[in-house]
Length: 294
Image (tube, rainbow, N blue to C red):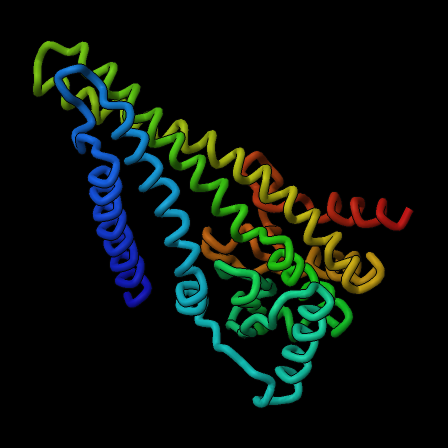
C-alpha cells in the first residue's frame, strides 16, 4: 500500500510541477497557452508542451531515482561497519570507483534474488545496490566483476544518456500524437464528435508511437550493457572475471527490478531476447567479452 501511495504521490507532484513549468515557459516566450487558436493548430505551444512534459518528466524521475529505488526495493544503505561482508562490499566499490575516476557512490543491499543495479542523476552522487542473494551465491571475484559492471554504468553516464533519450522520445510521441489528433478531429463538423475523435486518435497514437519508442530505447540499453561489460573487464584488467560472473548469472534465478531500474541492472534473464529486452542474451555478452580477449 505504501508503494502505491508513493507512486501516486510522485506522479501527481511531477504533473503539478510540469504544469507550472509549462505556464512559466509559455509566459516567458509570450506564447498563447491554447493549442488551438483562430488560425488553426498552435504548433509552438504544442512543441513547448511536449518538451516540458516529455523531457521534464524524464529528468524529474531521474532526480528522484535514488530515494525511489531505495524505497521500492527495500534497500538498506551500508557503510561497511555492519559486518565483514559489507566491509568487503564497500571497500571493493571504493576501489573500483577510484579506478573509474568517479566519487564514491552510496552502497546498499536489498532483499531478493540475484541482481544488482546502479542509479542516480549524477556520476558523483550515485547508488550501487546489490541483492542479498547475489552476495551469497557468487564468489568475491565474480561479485567484483558485477560491481565493476555497475560502476561502469555510472562512469559512462548511462543513467543520464538513457534519460535524455527517453525524454526526446517522449517529446516526439507527445508532439506527433497531439498534432495528428488535432488535424483529424478538426475535420469533424460536430463539436462533441470532434472531441471524441481527438481523444481516440490521441491515445491510439500515444500507445502505438510509445511502443516504437520503447523499441529504440531498449536497443540503446542493450548496447550500453555490452559497454558496461567491457568497462568491468577494463577495470579488473581482464574479461575472465566478467565472463565467469555472467556464466554464474546464467544459472541463477535473477531478481525482478522495477521498470525504471531494469536498464541499469546486471541481469534481465528469464525472458527471451526480443525488441523489448533491455539486456542482450548472456551468451552474446560472453561472446563479446571473449572477442576482447582475442
